[in-house]
Length: 198
Image (cartoon, rainbow, N blue to C red; front, side, top):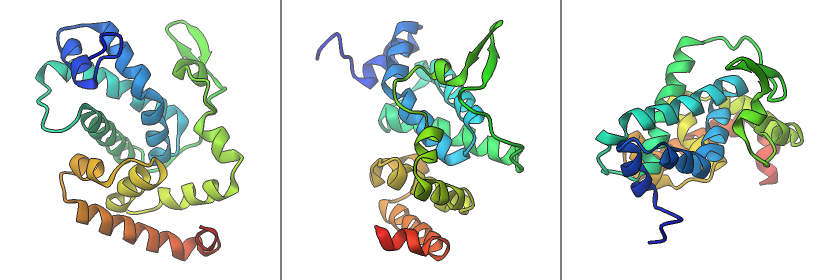
């Protein structure tokens, strides 16, 4: 094993012993993908940034008790999913969107959310704004029933495996496949012209 490139399991173990540098490495590895997933799930940039940060804070708090029944990545996404679900329950109505370029007061200084996330990749909103099809599908995905939305976002939009999704949901791969099929059918009714293209 390369000491300069430790596995996620090793990083979680080190985080459990209070190693903050290991947390930074884990965040660098997963932060952007996790943020994109949460954004597509919540469709709100400010909430997504907050949930992403809260997820890694919970990882730090609970790493010492992590029992590797599943991969660390699965554990991280399970935490994020639970936090996102809690946010949706609390905020049934979305009161508006915040741009990643909008300044946010963080520890006494105003800094854009995009800078806080620290990536050279385009923000999810910029990517979606350049693709009308994805904007349309995001709107419809947000309206999917809860049990269909997560598998569709996680596996289809974010391209994670069905097995990882099943582990997070504590269900079978077949159930995940069925829910994705049902999500596609639901979306197909709303987005017939989009699905004819793919």
